[in-house]
Length: 261
Image (tube, rainbow, N blue to C red; front, side, top):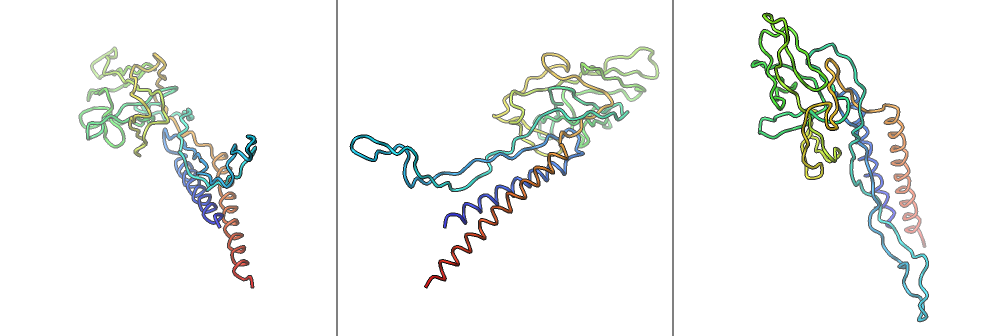
């Protein structure tokens, strides 16, 4: 019976669904995390009677054929790039993007990664870096004697040192945006990489040309909705149970066939 293999594909699909949901729930408190949603497609069909085939010499055709589906597969795990809530942190180097855009980060291998997590620190050279020590692009260097750091909505970084009465510009934070944000490749550590699906990035100053604005002393939280995830989890669990019940019913039917005298 094909029902065994068909129901098995359903159980496997819902297993993948639960894995996606569990990852969303696990990252509820991850800065800048964007939730994922599993999408499914039906598999190939077996034509037992092809629709549209001729049934007589006069040209009459079958109005509705007989097709048996082979099950379901996981087609994609879309990343939902909606804005997360912004929370105040009172930390000078915490930045949140309100709107479109990603911070640019230089990886050790020379590639450029992108992130929405604005939890930045200073390294030993005074450069603005991520929690893993990756330097942001373009580089921003803060003087050792800086006693006040100010970052405006346009990404301009100004510092006030012990010997100054007026602030000076220490650097400019640029953002990057993509035509297809869902096409970015997540590599962990709150970082994404450009792919052929995402397209090449467009860079520019925050709060200009469609870029979002920066908020100093704020962080963007994940966009995971706990109630929605629990609801999806229950639905996935019930779908898994129904597919398992199909396998049990098919097994009982095969057992009844074997017991025929």
